[in-house]
Image: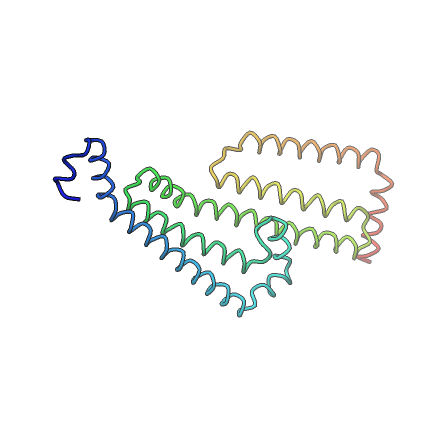
Length: 224
């Protein structure tokens, strides 16, 4: 459209036309970046999936119960799926930021960049929670098997208690990793655990003399 054609148009239309023409290169670049990002993300996702599948990662993690934990957390059916999923969206996210910069969407770009800075913190919190759940499961099995091997009563209760404690403290650590202030909740939980321990000690000392004696005799017999 030449200058003569623009002269016969109202000023608002002329201004809108000029803005559209001005942003066309940026919009085209953004669309190309998005298409390239989708292609790159799919290629890398497939590559990661094949490499980890050939390395038999799912088989190894299944033996130690990681697959079950991942499934219960709703993260996916296996660690290979989780890594592939995270790779896809991370690559796509990087191209989203570039596309937003191409069309001068500063607000969107700043939000995406802030999320990119927050992403490692979020991943760290998830790893803490994931590791805590895994350790809680491991400790649960250790306590239960040890109690069963030594014929100690209440082994299941102790195993569940150990599991819950590890999960609670892992969740609190993960939330603190996210920047949440949990000093009040932490103090309340410590008071609660102390109260429960004191109550259990009193009950054990006053009302559980016979049970305590039986447990001690069982332990002494096993050692003998």
